[in-house]
Image 1 (cartoon, rainbow, N blue to C red):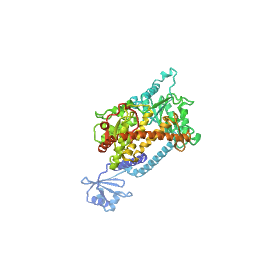
Image 2: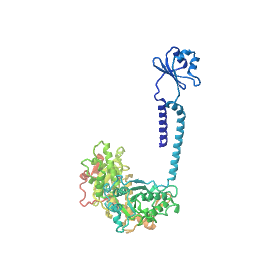
Image 3: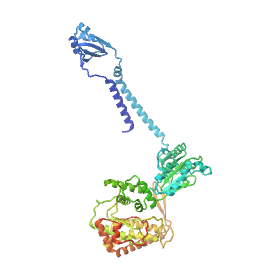
Image 4: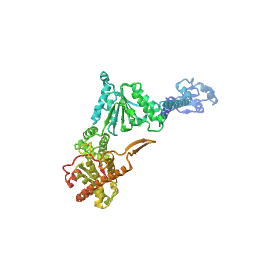
Length: 616
């Protein structure tokens, strides 16, 4: 029920209760007599006194009990009694007092029956007029920004609440200094930056970092999403931009945060509508407000996007977004710090080592790590634990990567055996190559769409990888495929995702990374983003059909080399793979130590890299 009808019901109910209270207050439970019974009482001498108020007759008997009666309004009580045959001397013997009806109850009884309906009608008319006026006001206010303002006195995040991103915090600390002590920079002729663009993958903490800047500086913070500017009507977005900056000018110094600015900041001239396109009108107004004819002193615009490649060049030039802060995925040290922040209010068991979690979560963003801690807390609560244990956190890693366990998913014995051999093939090819990461866990328990999985995690982060390391990754991805071929003489659909990853990897090696001996150091194909009634990715083929044939041949050669290497390892270690598969069929899961007990320690020259998780 909306607010209007709730107010109407409250008003009507209150008015009714007040009327009933005033009308019936102090009304005693007194018996009523008709005039014939009253005449009989007077004849018998049982009436002590009578009071007449209009048509109401109040009777006091000889025993001091009370009664009421009603008479006709056009005739006196004495005449009515005489008509009923009461003797005149009997009537004169009873004191009869006639009073005018001047009390509050009299007037309420006379007025309320008419007044209450009128008040209800006026109240309904007033409420409807108010609602219509509100609709009209909202119709006239569609050009206002509706930006949410967070006051400087409100408790907000600071840099202490943002773990990792050390370089980004150092870059933004200068913005805080500009806002706190602008005179120090103005004295040296330095201009306050007008805009800061936060760029990074989803979940790296762009919005959190913007809030931390406002919290550190202690200034008002206006927050608005890029999608909130654009409406169906042309000019609404530009009007909201003007209104946003108008509000900000009244609260300088302040921060204006525009989240997902790529919603309105895409490169102009790529869509339909020409100069009348609503999104382009909005972008033009943002450009004017940030660095137009009228300067905006004391307003710093902080924007966030994970698609800086599609932003308009005019938006990125100095004078508008003077600073560009890149937020990368956290390394192992930063992951440890982020996990520490998110674990502050969680009761952790003594066996929890956050450093180990950081080692087992390469490629996780800050949002992924927060979700990991939360999933572990939920899992511990479901198990009626008082503390979050290490086993809960490790299981949450697999849940975030691959999805929840599907223990109720029934497999035939033959399918379980194929899955066990497949995962054992992945694990052994990983184990016996010199540049791969150690195997952390093998399981044939279904998770998500995977029938089984092999986890291998690095102990340290690396930014660059060599061609030889990628060739080993291809062999690892095809290790399950090779094991199925050798052990069963046939293949299944379980290797489909492995082949997809291997194909994607070799295509990047050949066309993007220059790792083909035949084609040489050159990139092939450019991806252009076309915006035509939606988003479409189109590859611009800057090579001939003959080169396309050579690319296919080179990809085939790399995949064949990887498969040959995987087959050699599997063929030479069939007994070991059979042992690993047998234990998997019995226990369903093998941890790192259990796997090493079967196959021995890894090669002495094994390095720690960051290949992807292998899942069947």
